[in-house]
Length: 443
Image 1 (cartoon, one colour):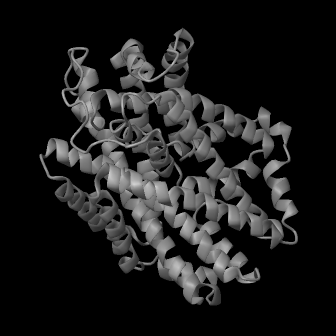
Image 2: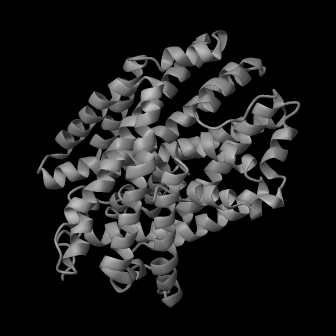
């Protein structure tokens, strides 16, 4: 079977490797890095957890992320077209139907994510005006997350994302990520630097970095480290495929994947250094999830000298992470509408934006949003990730995908890579899917 007929793609491609990597990092860095990673590091053994986490990051980056990038670049389209291509290499039909599953996952996450980012935007303005710090943290969160409680901010987030996407790959996605991601890292470095000087912050560093080696004997530590690493890299069978489809053939896919994984890990570590020591400095609970970011941290900011501006910097940083992730989710769906519904780009973006908003307004109430995200992240997304792993390394096959990965590489991948991909990586994706259901979410 010949390669995809369109060598570049209707939306163009990234102008540089750096632009591609920053866009991919923007997709990967999200709420899990900010409110879940720091908590889990301490809960499951500090440095002991990190050793396991780093190991999984390396494995998933080299094999999983590079596989999805290469799959997208080979087919020059999103999951529906890519899965269909892979199935047809075996003389089979139904690939498009299977590819719709991770696409639905991306749309589902986008709907819930837009709600959370709307809360973040509301908190930025609440920090600027000082209202957030003057109001009881639980009360302010309840106001923000009630029925239609953040409608204005919700609409603003969706419009912001749509405007970025309307600029296309180079002038929209690449340009905005090239600005927002460096700014994200700079702001978190500034916050972490300020937190370092808080009295009592040392306990937070102990929580993060003093190893509890007994945790290495706990299966849950390995499971949570694996889940955190897997979902942190956004290996969901959709988003990284679409960005890969915009990557130039001369670029080294595996190098780009490793760089993306490294920067995503740096972002998670910076979030830990900015949040956990501050929480411990004021003897508060570092519990993960929305309460950490929207209730615990505002209480911390209210007690820090100059806390109002630290709060602004923090929530702006979170906004940057949220918007860059949303851009990727919207893009997967918009490209599908362009390709399979024959829509113009701006019409496709408008359709996706409307769908995200129309469903999202009815789950602004936090308990509804939580249930929605549980369904999507526990069942739909992990299953889509398994489908993608099987589609790349078993249906398409290692010989075909190796050829794409080797394009732009000085040294081709070999038998060790193939064995790891087919028998270890694919097995682990299946395990992640099963354990995600058993534990009601591991990432």
